[in-house]
Length: 307
Ligand code: PPE
Image: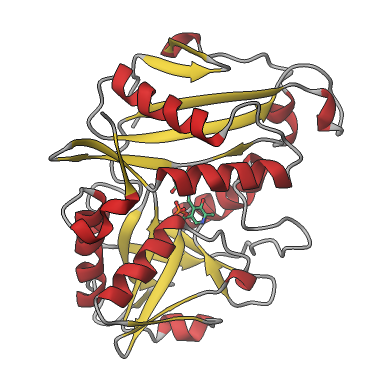
């Protein structure tokens, strides 16, 4: 599957044609992974396209930038406006939104402060992240031999470009073993997250998900799911989860902006529950998809309409 091109990309203050959004080969971030980014989705609703939790994603982008010593030369409001305008200009009803802040061409070497800060936003239609049938049929996952980095190696609660090499190695290892996705453990051996998604399990009708100290990115989808599940009357606990707890779970699922809510049917060749997408998982998935499409007024505060 190749990227679905759209008309315009916003780069350093201007809307330019997709094909012209280029960088120099000596761009600092290309060499050292010194950039930060976000992944946001915009969904079709009866009131037009709506961006899901835009302000929260942009807040996290600024937090990631600050941690990586980057000062973004635009305000949060300006970037939010750019995203709305870009979706309008590209005449999209639904899309994935990728803001990236990186160190450009200027100096080589590990001091990033000498290279200019550049900002770009691209939007394009992006279907199901873990495969067309993943939401309905679920996926098979493998516990990775790659661990998630502890916070004294890299703070896990930021989205920095270089950190994704760890995710890439885990992802490809899982694919090479015939699985759809990886599950990574933290440095202690407790369950952390997927390469690009958070993880939940269901045991005796209670939802469990790893806490912040398990080296996770505090997902915005994870937060939405916790609120949705509680509103549906389920208990949600943020606790350390062992590999055995995962194997013995009634249900399990991944959450993320790109992934949305995807049931996990098998882990390391063992069925999760009866090996089919769990009932509670599917109920939460359906509530989530209603929320993002503006079909539940309770969650409308999470939407930014593109008007
Ligand atoms: N953990 C990681 C490591 C991660 O990359 C994501 C998002 C999440 C958890 C879930 O976070 P949130 O989207 O706020 O619920 N991964 C993004 C990038 C995926 C990519 O391949 O690129 C995403 O889902 O947009």
